[in-house]
Amino acid sequence: MKSTVFEVATGHSEVVHDITPQCARFAREAGGDGLLHVFVPHATAGIAVLELGAGSDDDLLAALRDLLPADDRWRHAHGSRGHGRSHVMPALIPPYATIPVIGGALTLGTWQSIALVDLNVDNPDRQVRLSFLTSA
Image 1 (cartoon, rainbow, N blue to C red):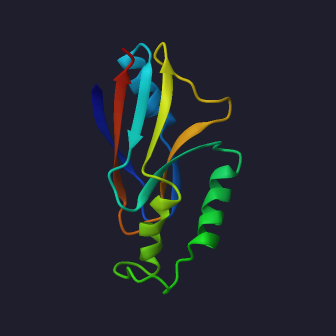
Image 2 (tube, rainbow, N blue to C red):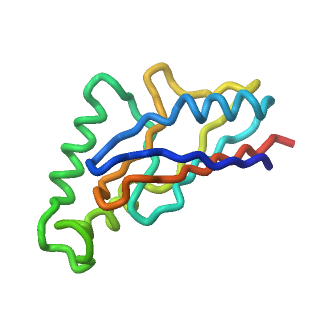
């Protein structure tokens, strides 16, 4: 298994950050057929596969604001107002995704991208681990 970690600066606002280029580069360098596993080792971030750049990223953030309001209802209450919602979000958008790779290329659909989703405005820096599992 080949593995690497890269940093993503998400800043102090809610974000859907496109990490497809880093994933594609790692898969290409790994070469061959296998599975790319994308993992974010944080309790308040997730990995999503969706269309980006056509408003879907903003729609996702709006839906998460509706489902997980940044208010005082959360029992996990340290940090900024509504911080507890960031700890619930990975149950809806898990901290991982696995993408098939054929000949060193991600087999994403035409409009699919890989994104880091982060609602936690208290943590501006994230790590993403990429692992390539080669087919036998």
